[in-house]
View 1: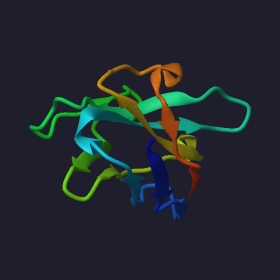
View 2: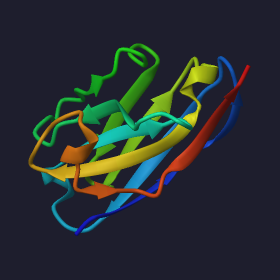
View 3: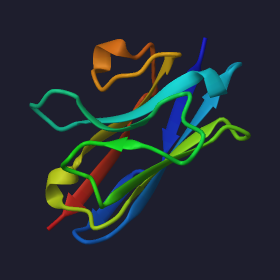
View 4: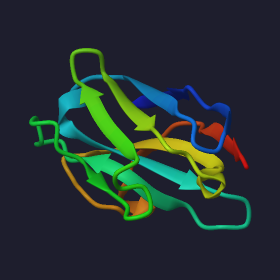
Length: 125
C-alpha cells in the first residue's frame, strides 16, 4: 500500500513558476513508476509527466504540452517526486495529481494503482 500526498499548488500569474511535491509513504518506493496528471473542469484527466521506476539517470517523459517548461524529478531517499513548473500558462490551470504504479509504465491513468488527493494550480492571465 502506498499513500501519496501532494503539496505546492496555488495561484500564480502567467509566466510564473510553481513547484509541486508528492510525498509517498510505504515500502519499496524505488520500485514504483511515478506520474503527474492533471484534470481541468469538464475535461478528462491527462498525463503530464512520468518517471519509470528503472530510470535512475534523471530521465523523465513529458506530454508535448509541457515539454520544455516542466521538469519532473524524484528523490528515492526521501520517497518524494517533484514537478517544477515554469512559464505557466492559463491553460495549465487544473487539479494536479500524483500517481504510482508498481513496476509498470504508461501514460494512461487507469494503469496507476495509487493516487494522491490532488492540489489545485490556478494560472491567471
